[in-house]
Image 1 (cartoon, one colour):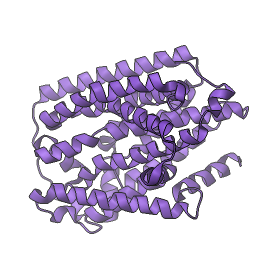
Image 2: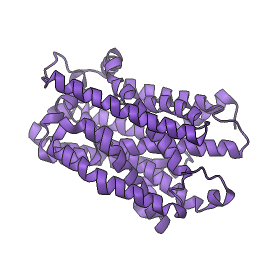
Image 3: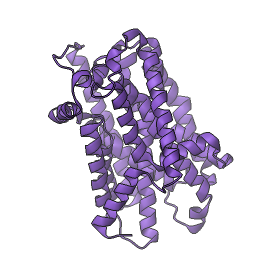
Length: 385
């Protein structure tokens, strides 16, 4: 794969590429909710979800496996593509790279910190800020160096997963246990925020564990963008990604995730799922090259993609209001037998609300509210227009 900055390459189907990028971001945002919603609807929150991974019934296994890790992987790749686009824009404008990108990373970290403390302890934005800061400097290196970093990050990720798997097998099965006070069901808004801060080290463990994977996916996203995955000439590349994602990774992912269940989460969430995400990316890219008009569903997804930060925070807020004790507290009131239909219902309600809010907001404003605050903060800190 080579970097392609020629005018011809840059001008090819820009509108189609923009639609595909926005739609992919929208799919990734609503797709991550498909995984996270099971955390919100567990009466014990994230702790209960993690302890119950191996106890899920067949219906829950199937539904969880359809989203587990795949849209998180897609979102991570999209962040890498976004970095490549920013770097290309800086070069065309005659600006140094990474230049003032650390300011952008800092603002993203603040967004993630707010999300982590007040809404969701499984926030991804702080990790993306750290990863983006690292990869921004890696993108300024040579193609050969970036390839080495990509392969090294993949090797480090696989080695780390192996060590964790061995440690878990050696430790044996754990017990779910109980806590005297359940902050998710019984705590106030501020008590739950304090609980997250008190356990920040444990809750942020995943961010550090998957840092090599995140670096690899950021670099891969940038590499795919440069290789023309959204261009007509990228058809052979898209076919390879479709084969890898849907022909190889998806069957392994579904068989392991549904057949073995929670015990296979390391393999699926951090192994096969990111490969399936590449298939999803290729499929959407191919669709919008063949059929440029997005249609009703595509337009709604693109609106979520254009307001991705706002929608990510909004869906966490809405799910928290519905499920946690400081809101309506519905999660603690649902019988275990009704957990699956309840979770599906909450997902549909939140997703439709997010789609509706994105549509109504963009009818009056050019960017989402969080994006506007982010952009205003960046201009104030850098003096750029």
